[in-house]
Length: 308
Image (cartoon, rainbow, N blue to C red; front, top):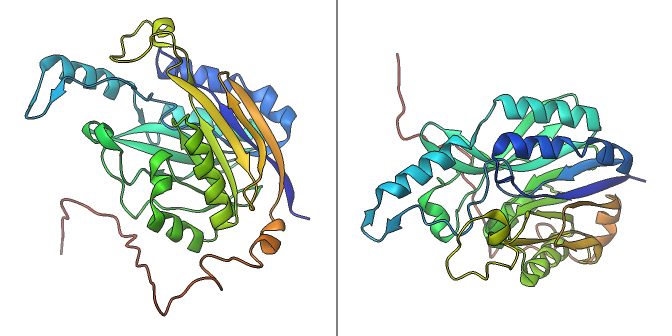
């Protein structure tokens, strides 16, 4: 039987910056090793931070100087891929004996991307996925990924792929990833709402795959010492809700709310064949004579230099 243990690490970015956040992540080594998990998913934008409530000094038609300063600080807290942080995470993956999927803010030139990185023990950084469509005002600060970063990665628990936060709501992206044979759907997020739990169960049931959703957890704005307009200063900024779901939509672990922690579940990828007996969304339940999807996986470059 193809049994293994998988986990979601619910944790938040440190207000002190990426170095403190990385140190907090690394402090879970003993707990991850003791859990026996061979795949651990961590939240969206964990290294680099999710600046909930920040407006970066932008109004329609103009931007304020203090917003440019806020963006410069945010840019400074992002990471290079590869870089010192990815090296530390690669070593961490090897020491834990677990593959990692972790959300980061990635610098590329002067542009930032919301990215999920994949690490395998003994192999290091093996793949990345850049969020295709930043949501709402996220578009102020993050670029859009393209089809060249839609990987699947073979881990000790099974074939894993990732969709970040609300791109989980993109039906065509889901179809493309199902067609790639994803067995374990990894969903780094900052969405704490109950409807998100419904979405995760739906994706598991639709794709007949295991789903691991890892959400950040952040205390109240008052505890963080920040001002978030129109927000109850004593209400948690992000309240977690990480969970693990089976291929028929059943919750296997979680949701964990309001605290940092590791949730763990045993999975068996051989269950997927039985789950897909009556519904294989890109197999016998598809209608290619009626519907088809083309996915462009070429890397898009603004400037191409051609040298004879």
